[in-house]
Image (tube, rainbow, N blue to C red; front, side, top):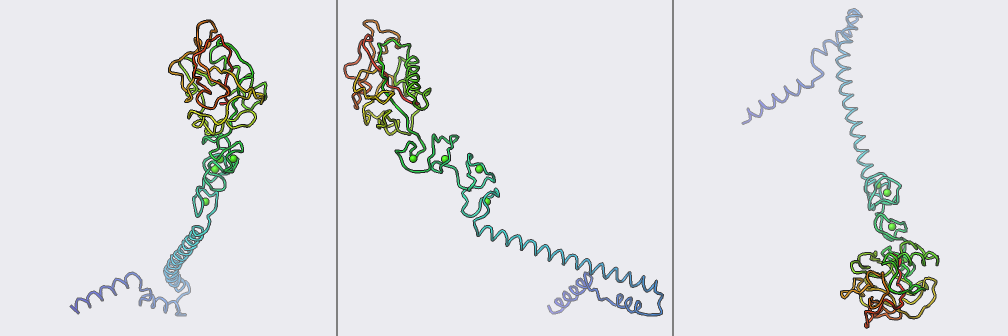
Length: 316
Ligand SMILES: [Ca+2]
Ligand SMILES: [Ca+2]
Ligand SMILES: [Ca+2]
Ligand SMILES: [Ca+2]
């Protein structure tokens, strides 16, 4: 066993010296030859040059590789130390990489996309309107009754038409046009979005209306419902008895043919698609003074189309 170790030791020394024992006897000889004044300067110089070249080459190579190695090590340690500091800190918002407390970092200054320039995810309540994400408004607060609620849904107006008519008014589209016209004349916001709360024999508000998460208000500010679900749950908070100008009409029949859920009434009666007021054709209506289901579906329905009714107009 010891002899085996000895062999290995010798072999290792041999390998080590083959790879790098620069102070070999030949070089020493050359060095002494170089230092010999009798040698011609050229040969000495040549020898010295050769030796120096070798040595310099080796040294330069070693120095170079050491230098590279050191410089590489220095660079990489410097980089990793920088990275470590950055990771440990808040990072740099805007560099395109998510670090520290950043929720996101898309590397741009666009606040209208999914990541704000402050590296916070865009959303309802940040005070920036993101209609591309379904926000109707964003007032940056959680106050529900200031026109923009905590779900970023805005208020919508509802009114009872100041006018009334028999059951012939050019179909639901005629009623819609009348709602738009009255809303526009009254200076209400988004007048061209208005629709009549009305069904014909086929369609209904459930299909036509945007099911808002925001409030429905009378034009005098009174709350009718907190949202679509509240509007269609069978009762409303206050009667829809105020017209487009904020005037309290008080009561009146209203053409609807619509259930409290916003659907076409199962026993549909719509004055032949709201195109006739001739006897004995009938239509269904609601009562403007009511908050129970009779607001849209009166118990004594249907009524003759020769009677007079208002419309409920909703901002959509
Ligand atoms: Ca960043
Ligand atoms: Ca952005
Ligand atoms: Ca927003
Ligand atoms: Ca608000």
